[in-house]
Image 1 (tube, rainbow, N blue to C red):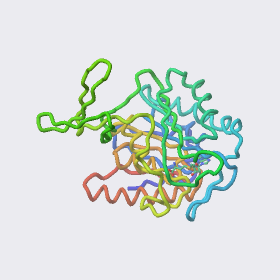
Image 2 (image 1 turned 180 degrees about the horizontal axis):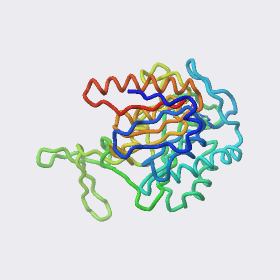
Image 3 (image 1 turned 180 degrees about the vertical axis):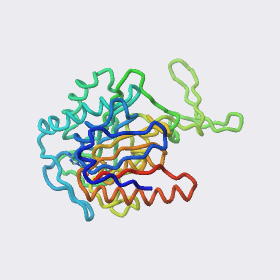
Image 4 (image 1 turned 135 degrees about the vertical axis):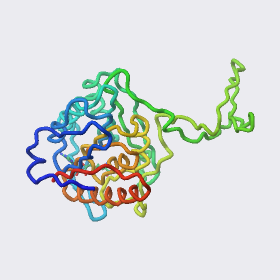
Length: 308
Ligand SMILES: C[S@@+](CC[C@H](N)C(=O)[O-])C[C@H]1O[C@@H](n2cnc3c(N)ncnc32)[C@H](O)[C@@H]1O
């Protein structure tokens, strides 16, 4: 179900109001990241994922859709992004986390800004997302990863490792044996002789480099045509790691709405913002289609307020 916010309200409301319960409406907002973030109450969010535009200074072209990227000037980029990061920190709950998705051109500049803002002790992980699809380099190694910086607002951040376990792959140093009928991987420490056993079925908590999620290729079913669309599985791992059903997440640079779509599917509430009307139209259609499928399966999502 959608609730249309009146035309001028999105621009003039000085506060976004959220209900307390997990059926409170979700918010899809056409607007500027900073303007919207500034209207979100303190501590209202459990997690924020952002994938801000950076790098080429040119128009990013997808299939039928485009948006203007930021110029390739890292200092100007950090100056522009910093107030958004400040509001991100303010709007997180004490146990909340911010994830900032960047590539090799900007990550080191933004990391310094985030260290200053959150404190170095609140830096949790530099997640290296590796993929194979894309061009090759003749003058160096192919640039085949992005970086996602994870910062926590407080000392006691939420983390649900059991929600993100992945299958264990046996290394040459691992034997698979059975123990009480269950497959177990076994490793012996050569120095101490100590034997370590890990149940195969339980899987393992991923390390900080993720090479098991491929970037979307041109014919991928998930593809919406919006440039720089990220795979749902990537955002799913992040949201499962730090939130529970009923929590609320935000994405100030929503693009095709991957964060919102994953949040809706995982029964998390969301605030999704993009300044391009075309993006909002696309996210709206994506959420409506998924919402119908969820309702059919008996898990109807909350209403969505659409601010234009
Ligand atoms: C890299 S894309 C995000 C892609 C998204 N993660 C996805 O999976 O589709 C960045 C987005 O930021 C939006 N954007 C750029 N400047 C903005 C601003 N000042 N406020 C809100 N959105 C902005 C662009 O329209 C673009 O859709």
